[in-house]
Image (cartoon, rainbow, N blue to C red; front, top):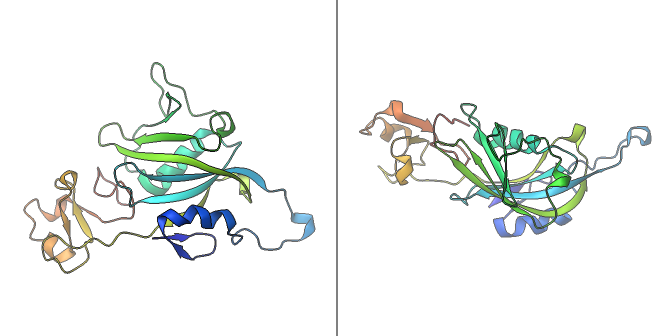
Length: 216
């Protein structure tokens, strides 16, 4: 399940895109005629963890925004820990935060790269990589102050049970064990874990949970 950031209602992952196509809440408050501005054309983009599909969100990105704004949004919302490099792969071409041979920078506007139905990928950190899968769902009109990317919906945090006691919700994850899908502990059980509590990070609502130094 996830929550619509516009109206606050909860919907399943499969039905959220349909809901967002009709939701009129958020950014629709009446304003004086003298302050009204035309709505910006935006791409409605669905995003999910490539290997952790329980983490997903929807955003509205102005068509004139450069690709680097989407990169910055993903870092700020889900990923940034140690200023790692990142890259998009769109139609077989890479757009990187620090371009190498054969790669482009992220200055191109989204309108030059996307159309409705475009599927593309993103990776953050070339060592302990977090991979995302993205799709342009629709073209929409939304209020977008200063061309900002707007969060439309996000998954509710998965409730993961401590793998030691099997009773409490996990609040910490061991960075050594996480790569094998293990190491989820409540605060009490983390103290008794063989790797030591100092190897644990907080459980956060992100596909980068338990990776590198990410704490949300």
